[in-house]
Amino acid sequence: MNKKSTKERAQILQLLVEGNSLRATSRITGASINTVTKLLVESGEACAWYQDTNLRNLPCKRVQVDEIWSFVYSKQKNVPEGMEGEAGDVWTWTAIDADTKIVPSWRIGSRDAEAASDFMQDLASRMASRIQLTSDGHKPYLSAVEGAFGADIDYAMLIKLYGSTTEGQKRYSPAHVVGAQKGIINGTPDKKHISTSYAERQNLTMRMSMRRFTRLTNAFSKKIENHCHAIALHFMYYNFVRQHKSLNKITPAMAAKVTEKLWEVKDIVDMMDAYFEDKQKGYQK
Image (cartoon, rainbow, N blue to C red):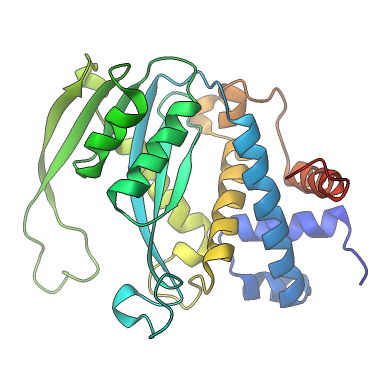
């Protein structure tokens, strides 16, 4: 099979990170669905490795965390017999730095205490110094943050209070927020920076940038592996390629001093090629 050029592969990845489904990308580029899927898998593996390796010792100061719901194959109530553990609800735990906008850590799994602990342990391992952390009122955060950071953190919870939804809009409209309570859990967090706004905005970015996260479509993930690959590719693009107006047209990775150059999608393809070349030689595990 002939390998597509760097330009052709970059076009496919560009379409995927801009919210197109696998089949839509196949139709637009003329590439087969198998080619598009294979490129997603390869890019996701390489992007996950690259970010795991390079997003270390980060100068984050004000970090916000949240969880976003999705599903694989079917919603939890419709999981077929024998597919337990392979299908159903999937939660993505995300962290974002309020200053550099970098996403230093994410975890994919359930919404329980074990997943929260794994997520916080990973986040803590990537920070260069003490941070102020804000989460919502999800209880597993309490033990997870303490286990990962100990007393070396300024931690607060923002608990939103919701009113009743308008009749007839219960299914599609979020509940109306009528207030919020700020609770200091540990340390001395700055009250004016107790917020989850950036984390919630990142959730919207994920739903707009990954077709499989869009509600009420048939583009949802059919396999958990491909779901993970799509998320790794999304964050690679978000951290290293996508320019932010609030950062004076630089990327989060540049703002966080992870890289000095402005990446293009072509650079993701080049990184991917180098990764698999090294892997073939036995350099990558």
